[in-house]
Image (cartoon, rainbow, N blue to C red; front, side, top):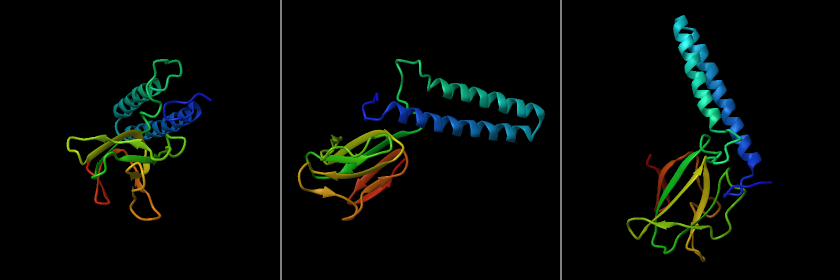
Length: 167
């Protein structure tokens, strides 16, 4: 099967698009119901607005678009991590639903930020399970038998074992 850069099959991408499309249809139905409970003109406006939003959404998943964006753009967002460490280099070993499993150990090398002890990693994903390491024997995990987990897109800082969402 054809796969993208993360090893995600096109079938998985299409399934994600289908789930997002279904959620959008439910949102349209709610807007219609809420708009219809007010004035008749309000209901028509809600229907028209919801239909326009659905058309824009569906055009994002046009199978004929060869120049294509990422099939997960609408269903996911960017997860960014700033990791404070003395390791040089630092690696992130991770798994996400948009991935076909864990990265090969030690994982991906993190970029150095503005300060030498700041390492940066960003990925488009809906959530992320990860551990960090120095590329050899040292690992950073929240506990012996657990991994770090980010449940939604956003910007995070990991410092001294504490993971905090900053936006």
